[in-house]
Image (cartoon, rainbow, N blue to C red; front, side, top):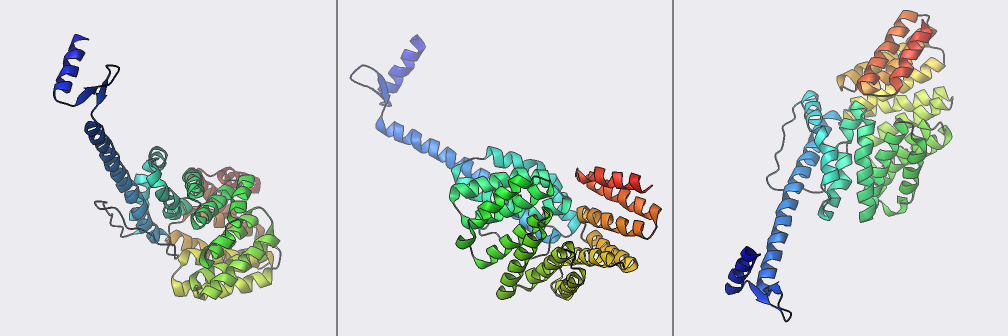
Length: 371
């Protein structure tokens, strides 16, 4: 106590403390104001450091993502904060290496950096990382990040951010069988349609169609795909128009309208080659193979599946290679090529397992059944 009193007297002598009417010690107004400035400065410095970290993870993810997925996407609306290191990505291998190296920091950063000034970063972060999650089939990791993105978007009441994050979350949830929660995201998206621009609306319609397709609601899926196709055509967006021709064809095939499906998909191929979208071209050849197989032309179906797999391999999309291997194996089994079918299903299981996907067990079970 004696030591404390000495310090109090010293501060009072320096006019840093005064005594109130009750004899208590209080800070001088100027000292209080200066202390507040120091606290605010510390907060500003911390916020700047946190912003640099998130900008590093966001903007470099966008750069690496453009290498993994050449389809057009929304560019960042901002520029990185001063001092943010930019990585050089010369190949898909470089891009994947960067994503894998930095992935552990993503959820930790988003969960711990909760300053209100960072809300906007949370809304765009999941979209910037979307290409990596899709190519790697990292749905569970993506869901964790996207839930944070949806929360931030709702707090900001930003209709475009809500739509973008809900759309991507709905797809990831449907991929993992969480259909009811995917429906919740779709309802949120539908509530934004009158508040968003035409391009975002087209993407929303495309996503709703995709989720409805996963749910087995093929008529609804086809309706939404056609809505998206109409929007992209009106916008003159040839890349998205080409992709949506394939979507329409795929849902027609799932409805059993195989010849119409092939026609729709074949119209997509030259457009996709024109814009250099090999990943979507791979998906289109898979759709054509599926419809051709249902029409009984097994040789042509196998050739189409192999073309699809070749393209997926070129763009390092192992997850979708596994999807096509499942289709290929079924055609091989129909041709009486039991060993080849087993090998294809086993390979599909290996690829799904590498992504910790539940479908690995399904592929291995099919291989056992075929023996």
